[in-house]
Length: 228
Image (cartoon, rainbow, N blue to C red; front, top):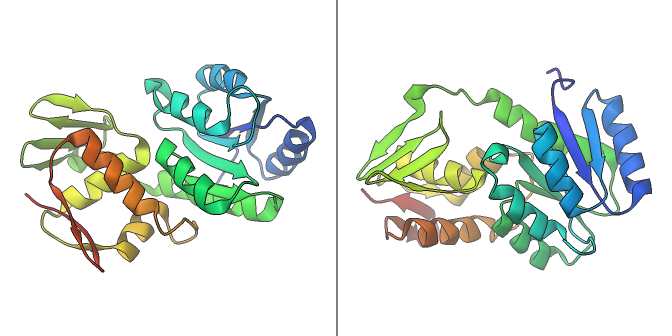
């Protein structure tokens, strides 16, 4: 897979971290740009439309969680993947990060080979996903359009971050089928991505809040299903 076509934005308030990561990512062929804070990151992201943004969580003024939330509100950046870097307590940061719309999570101190492996795994997944009009799912009063990346309920558009969109589409693609947690992790996050046990639960809760309907049911000890 050719990675030179992929643009990565690195965001960290420590210039030596940016220099270290930039060097290693450029060696792999990525096109890399950097930002030293959240506000600069948003402006740079709008200008460059990166495929993937690597965000430090602990930054002054606007931290990584806030920056991620702001990025997810911008339609032009809805398809940009986001990976958090953090040295904070794992449980809190993972839940907050995925809640904000992150796609993955890497802890400091950073091991370049591990980070690069995780980034490549994410980019392979989006590269392998076919995009066509046949990917539209119509069930009950919902239209889930992968080509335009929108969810409509009775004609009203519902805005969902990328992972919530993918999760809703997966469940709705086979109404009343129970998807196990293992299936969901594999199809939405990929086998090479390590996420916390509560990640799915956080995403399901957010989807329920946004669609305002009790169509996603929990099957205790197994997983979830979309009830048509």
